[in-house]
Length: 311
Image 1 (cartoon, rainbow, N blue to C red):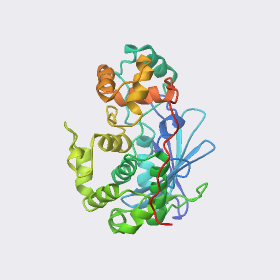
Image 2: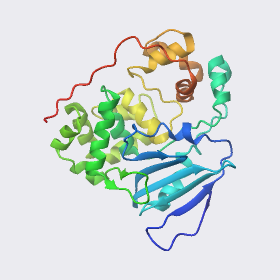
Image 3: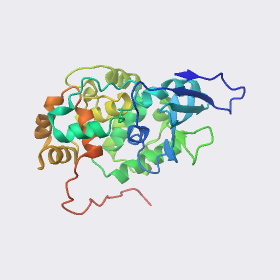
Image 4: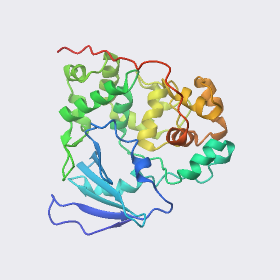
């Protein structure tokens, strides 16, 4: 990666360019990061992907786009711009290595791997944000979860620097997460169990980070109160780009995997059996099936979310 000389003004961006060793499809790699079209930390404008983040040096805004020659061009603003630039290649899949992945075990996986050769597993390295997103998405509808994330970040985060296409916000700092009052969790639409899990985690972010960094079976994250296999896997997928994480307990995932690989629904045990030949790379298979696999027809109306907040 090449980085230009730092700008003279704090309001000006730092810029860099990264030449991937293999093709990278930015849209498929980064498209899964955003939590809905109103995500206050992520936006896409034309061919540019914008991400507001919290770095050790403070908030930063990163903008990345792909040059015609395949290079990833990045610009960053704010106190954390140098950190954001240094991390940009990892966000775009630099540390994801699909070598050794045997796609030939199933014709659908083989064809998806061939057509989507540029799909990489992104990693944000932002454990608190990844964990908070996963907890907010426990056992609720997508609209409820994305709405809660949007409200918490815009109320307790920090306005992102730079010429963003719309107002973006860096997630709260560790201290800001701890300072969120109980009424704010409720007003954001979180259920009490979710709020309690996040309050406990915010009091010990160091322990959460250590659990995410550790490896083992069962996942060390599930030792934390309010955290099960689904939340642990989702946190690892977002923060670390874990190529093997499987979100057991997901309302739809087992059905999608079973239908894509066999033409029939299955449960979690059946999904794990189907994915076993790819152990070590199971998340990659899931991503490929999600991007290219057949979709099971809907069997009924969507769940109507309940809103218990005071008006």
